[in-house]
Image (cartoon, rainbow, N blue to C red; front, side, top):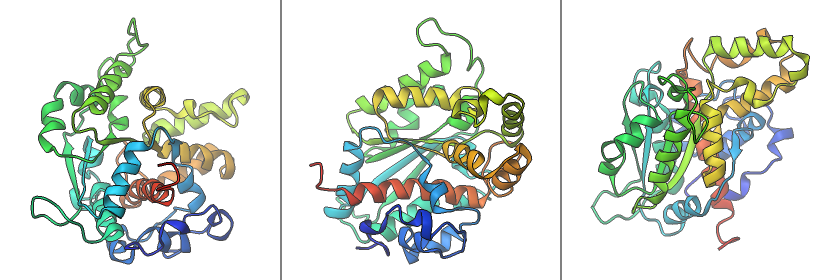
Length: 317
């Protein structure tokens, strides 16, 4: 295996043995090949149980397995596109070099090693299509410039949850779908799934702003009927709920940092103040832009899903 740990090493045993945040805990050295660790840095605040809770929806993984099979078995070069807003662009971490797409690019190249291509570029690549403040509505309307121009593609990662809640009239009722943004998330999803390139698609859902999350936690504490609170108490203006509804209906695999936070709060933080300190001290700024450790967390969540798909190759073929 090109990766340091290999697919068989991703077990739940880390929940007991590796519930620590040491720079090179065993789960970290197993998941992140040595060649990629320089761009991930120290996984401050991240534990394996927390990382495992980013699985919000398994979905239909046939396309995702095809992506992994191409990279790990056929040793063919792959092209990944990340579409999103300022988070994807690396706001708050100095730009693209510190953002999660760059970390994922390093992981893919270290994990799968040398590859063959038809265009002479023998490496896995992660492309970025981003406009600050853009939403699923923008990507659905301008699909040709946001997505199609980057063809061929093997995997598209959709990161609009931070902005979809801010979009004008995002929560306005729609006769057929409940909210206008939900309708546009569905349009974008259908365009991706029906596109002739047939790439794998994965939602990458983030979490609330620091102030917004804090207010939600305080509200949950005040209402004993919502403790421990459900994930919907922390959804960013319905954005992640809309994403989840569409992803569930179309069986789109998803990772969610909000799900991980819900587990952390219910398990280890008895008050809103404690939860706020434990999560946001390292995750995000006052808005919604992750710090360096937050971007590492996003990339690790994606890498873990890809490693898990690699571990079951052949079992369901």
